[in-house]
Length: 210
Image (cartoon, rainbow, N blue to C red; front, side):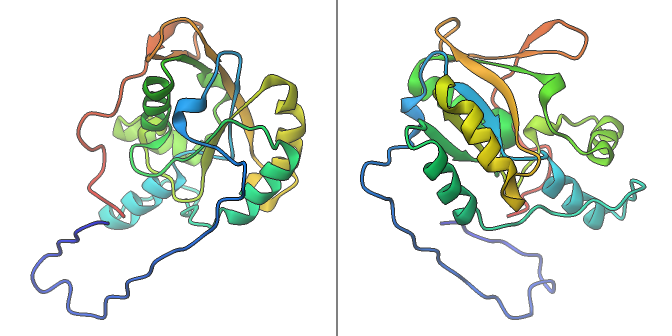
């Protein structure tokens, strides 16, 4: 759980606390240590919308087209994914720390390398512009309705089609793969063709937003 701290005089309303419950189907194992070399890495949609939306409201910034939070329940999408690819290896939400933090945690847990291509990342043009202006990287920005999945290569095409057929996966994209090289390290192919190591997020790009 989380401990919330609010400024004096700014938390005088009603606070509503909720808890979520769910079931893990028999035989389903989706922990981070299950990533394997040659797995395909897929994200479910556009990255960074939530963090930039919150920042724009808090700071009173405008970035042209309105940027909306991606808050959404993912249980329906996940059920669709498990039907399409019952052997998928890893599922992970992309909340605090964004895609970069999730990939680093998975790489270290499974002792594998992960490589992705920045040109394949689904990022809304307004979010990309905002991140450029503010000196942020979309892969570190929080999401509230996105996930990353690691799936055996032979099931990747069917899984991607199933995800794109669901409203919350319409912008799903293959972004990279798992490799036996550089275990525990995430490497990105940049937009200009170079390569860079993508580290865990250090500190916070944004004040805590959830």
